[in-house]
Image (cartoon, rainbow over all chains, first blue to last red; front, side, top):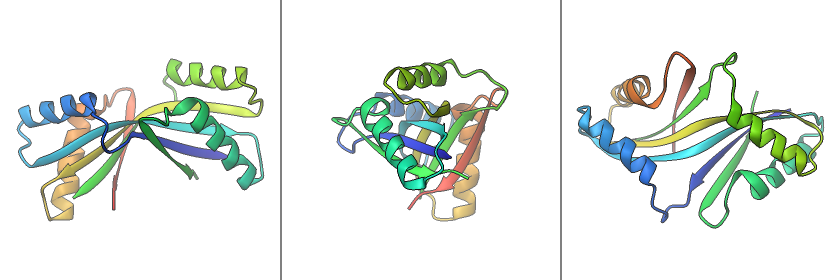
Length: 80
Length: 80
């Protein structure tokens, strides 16, 4: 069963990486850019047929390793 | 208008970062893991009301800066 996990910085946390990307895009001539924020993306495939159990497992992985919950949020979605 | 861009390595490209995450999760006791692959996530907010023009702009950014098309794919989706 495949899931995707998106980890993003919480709203009030500074995102220097996103800032650099944003500035670079502006230097490349894109003038109407409001905001760029960068995050992490994980594709996880686990050997579990029960969707609820599987999602719980992915939640545990996200909490324990993939994200730092003090500064980051994560969103799990089932992939096709 | 907000978009999210997910950049992933193409299928045949080795993903050492994903490998490390996968191995770490296994060491943490998760035994039924098949695969972890890591990618990048961008949230982009641009000042453009025409959704087609806006998406085209995001596509240009993705092609020129956010992804390396030799080894990576990207997927754009409109965010709420």
